[in-house]
Image: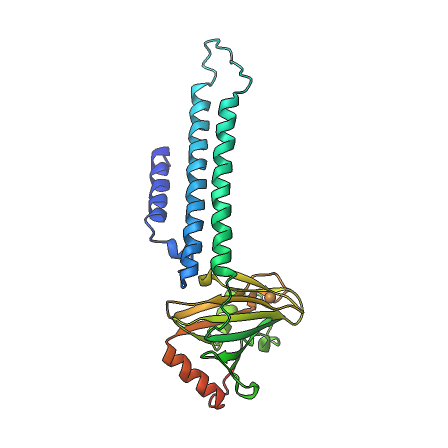
Length: 275
Ligand SMILES: [Cu+2]
């Protein structure tokens, strides 16, 4: 292929990426106000690094061409530093880092670490090799007594008898579709209290943009207030053993009414289809 054709193809690929037609494959949608704020910070960081990267590469290529040996006997000129330049290229990054650090810390404190005292829903998340167990302990801000708590078990461990997972994607996806989703209400606050029975796992719904370790003997909390209904994946984000990849679950954000009806149905033992 001619270089010009190659360049054209590369530019077309770049344009396709930049126009956003494939953004959803690069980054999942954001479903909370907090995740929007995290995304903004992330995009600012990406743009800063991208501008610096492109600037550096352009200057590099330009200098390579401009100062190449052209066979005219030119000798290189050596310089021994410039305090002014060094102060500028140290000072600007330091300023940028301070701004980003303050921004991140504020975001962490104001949003992610600000666990609400009285959430609408409280869910105990128990991880073990290799499944998630969700127990709704509080709903509509009220404690649910133990006997009638809705429990959703991702139950991937029930396929332990299956053949070794040599056909990972197909098998994984077919098992995945059969999982009963954990339901939480839209526009209400949910707190997840996360722990583990064995090794360290990590509870992650990519659409939350928040990941939290599940550690044995310790409870970590995260909170979210989703603003979009839909079905989202729950995954384990900490390599926890040979079944790590199938440690997945499904989270369904539903309307308040749908959620209340689901909790009532679970409490009355109406549905025993937990798996
Ligand atoms: Cu795990």
